Image (cartoon, rainbow over all chains, first blue to last red; front, side, top):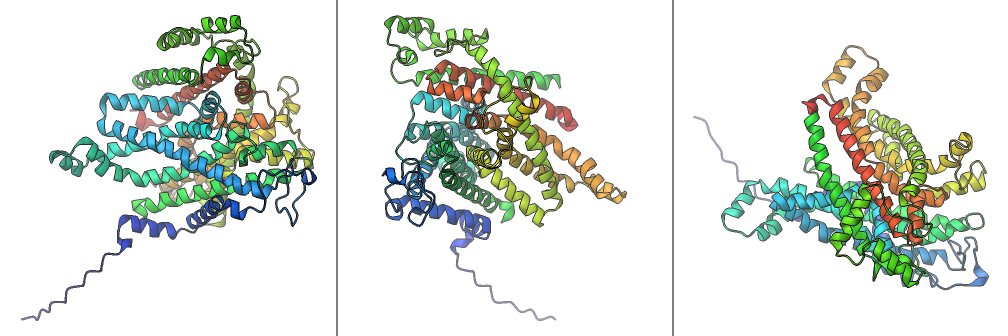
Length: 296
Length: 313
């Protein structure tokens, strides 16, 4: 006869927040140094945008004829521009235009693209064919050229630039959401939800949409990077933020005319665009890896 | 293959139709009376009436679209309201300049992006890989208009090696032409090379894990031969195909690059048209760009199927 001993049951661990898929993804994200660096730089820029009036040493639109095109100094760390305005203060205030353009235009794209993508993917048939062809048509026009055309027809202003960038970013969100919705709608739990009489709207919002969120988060982050460059490009061409309000793109436009006598005018706004875009790209790449189930 | 081509051609018809609607709709975004806006400073009622009659602004929108489409299909994109030259003629003049710039940019992108991607994949996890990834991050994060300004400062103002702006055509003087386009072509190619690098790296990593690579190594083939003859040859197919799709990025980039370097191409044409409120030119440029992009997409798809026997069957 053999003695059998029963082991004491292993006590169940209390469910921690890190046990949820979102918690694991977050933990995964914070284990990636490049994503953390990206996030940290974004936080700094957001802080600068929010607290700009307290952080900026001077009024960004105050001109001074005695300070025209002064090289960087202790009084003006980034130098001054062609109207004697402090470049550091303009770069700090310019963060507002860039970040708001990035966030608002991508919000426009998400607000239009996600419902249309859900509709196309979940409904299928003629609605899908129609939405898909419109999406193809929009994707066939190079984004910046279409944004320039839209901004030109709408009229030059930061608001119209945001609308133009938002519209041109929309097809990516339609295509992404549609693809995810098509994958999810054949799952058993969707069939079960339909069988118990849930409405299409409820199924789309409660069961399909949550499955699209991880891919959307990655795309939103990368699209913000693209939108910031697009806003800077439109402002550089004079179709975005209008003077004298500061914007990195319009600052580069005026800097180009004074490259020989005041090269510092071109360095800081360009470096700021590069830094913020790189940070969103780092965060987007990190999110993509962190949300990949294979990585978990 | 023929049925695939036929199916693919049929697919682009609705896309082209929606592109035409999209571009025609731009005109509807103009605030107020489009004839007044198109007339610009001219407030002469006769001119306004002429514009209204010529573009059928008094007709319902679907009829306006049909008239516009009839013109497009016969190669008539209207006339520039500012310089009184047919839009088609303007595009014909400017397109070769941008094509030269885009071709040079593509060559630069291939020359940088593919070797960087191969090195990154072969030396995965080493300093070379990190350097190549940093280069790719730099490429996709740098606004090309800033890079252009910085390169003008360095190579034209500080070193005096290259002209800061202007364009000389290849026929006129090929050396001066190359000198005037090498900086803008590098600026344009920079971002694309980063994309090529990423595609090449992931394609190479996948191919290097294949059985036939292991077999080639087992048969004693040298490492350079395995990488170049066996791995790269197969990895390049998706890279080149995806590269064709970067034309949109090139054309978008050309708008700003041509503006910075004062190159009289397609990009500068659209920007000048925007500021002159020459809306027919804007519409024409967007239409030609979109059609070119759709055609290149089609060619890329066909090429991909042609070189991939599994897809052909």
